[in-house]
Image 1 (cartoon, rainbow, N blue to C red):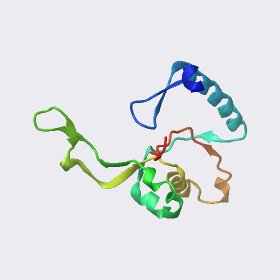
Image 2 (image 1 turned 135 degrees about the vertical axis):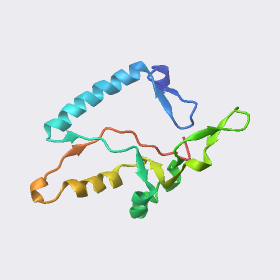
Image 3 (image 1 turned 120 degrees about the vertical axis):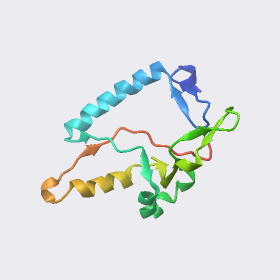
Image 4 (image 1 turned 90 degrees about the horizontal axis):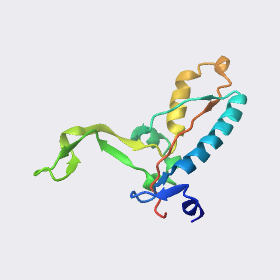
Length: 142
C-alpha cells in the first residue's frame, strides 16, 4: 500500500508481477549504483547469465529446485502462429524446442556450469562475480 501510495510501483496485468514506475526506478538505480560500487571495490566483476536455463541443468539440482519447482515457467516452443481466422495466436506445433527451457528461477545451475569452464586451476581463483538479474517464480500466493 505504501509503495503504491508513493507511486513507486503499480500492479501489472500479469498476476504476481509489478511495474516499477519512474520514481521507483530512480530509487532502484541509485541503490544499485551504490551497491555496485561497493561490490566492485571488493574485487568482484559484473557478469550476466542467460534468462533461459535448459531443464536438464535444473534436473541435476533436483533437490535444490524441489522447493520452487512448481513456481517455474517453462518455454516449450520458439514461435507462435495465428489461429484459424487470425483472431488469436497459439504455439506453433512445428516449433517445439528439443529441450524445454526454464525461465530463470535461480542462476546457480548456469553459473556453476560456466565456472567449470572458467576455473581450470587454483591460479584462476579467486573468482568474484556479481550478477544483477531478475528471476521468475510464479508463487502460488501473491
